[in-house]
Image (cartoon, rainbow, N blue to C red; front, side, top):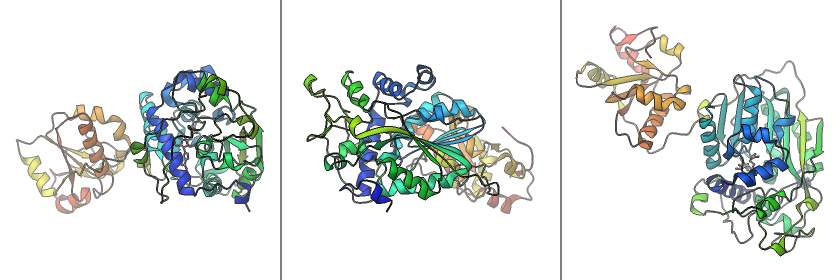
Length: 475
Ligand SMILES: C[S@@+](CC[C@H](N)C(=O)[O-])C[C@H]1O[C@@H](n2cnc3c(N)ncnc32)[C@H](O)[C@@H]1O
């Protein structure tokens, strides 16, 4: 019944996902057209002041609204942005929620996430305050239930395949705290699309072909549990994607479709490949008119539909809904299920060797080895008993400070990492440090993991006072 309210295409869900992934990954890697991005952003309501407050490459003319303006974000709130792209709305949200708040952007594209993380790093914004996490919105979100005050999304839900549209509203409802709100900017269909639009993949990745009517959208929200919803037609000009591109000498990307000559290669599995965009670079040409005589738009799509009047078929809407209050429901203060999702995964190639406790004792007692031992557990865990002389750097805060960390221990010939059992935090931190060294072509120090972590160390040496310390922190 619900899916009947969406418009079926001839493509299956995994094909649509891969096509969207490849298109936006390509944009993330190639787009740098600030004038185009700014023209589109201003047309959808971003003020010059807002645009000056965010990193210039955090927006690429991909949005269809300005959700943080109407989201009434307050200091200390937890905000989630679905399909965060280059991060513009997360950067604006971070300004409103302040340093005590949590802003998390989710996106399927590793290239988009990398771009947003780079911009965040430049601004000195790090997890847990500001995080960007790679994930599919068509799968369970990596977010705890009842943990988010406000869910935002800007021109993304239309890109989800039919089953994903149904799924995401249930996930939004699950992650919102009772009384929490969702503020979506999205493209909605004004009427049933003819096959020329519905089945045109260029229109789909361009945020038009996957748009559904307001009735279908509302039904999906209602079925997820949202009782009261508000739909406001922003009356913005969707043809801006074409006119802004046409008036600028750029081949950059936008939310408009790619030229119809660009083939999208189907995938057979639901798994999204991050290498697909590498092997099949796509140049997004937006609605760039082919010549000055092509500039007129038409209501009914001709073959190729390059000159479609987008305003005839679709409109940008702001959609609001609130999860009903429930004073008895538990609220989660933690938002991300796994804190490490907010950081790059260590490179698979960095296989870090392990050393046994006895080998570490030999190194510590050898005069010729400058060995530094790093405990990556929390300060509390560290103080309850650690390798004597080890330094404490909690894993959650190590990644942003790797350069300073390296400078601090530049004289070490070997750095040994450990945690409780050396199965999670220690290999991750050791991998990050190895990646940092590789990235800067540094050949030392050597990096190891203490096998069995502090548990094995205490099993073997808890009675040896010069090998175990309690309490004192070495930094
Ligand atoms: C039109 S862009 C909007 C980006 C951003 N919200 C903005 O306003 O600049 C859509 C974004 O959603 C992401 N996206 C699309 N489908 C997705 C999915 N199924 N799961 C996760 N991210 C998705 C894309 O990678 C892309 O970054």
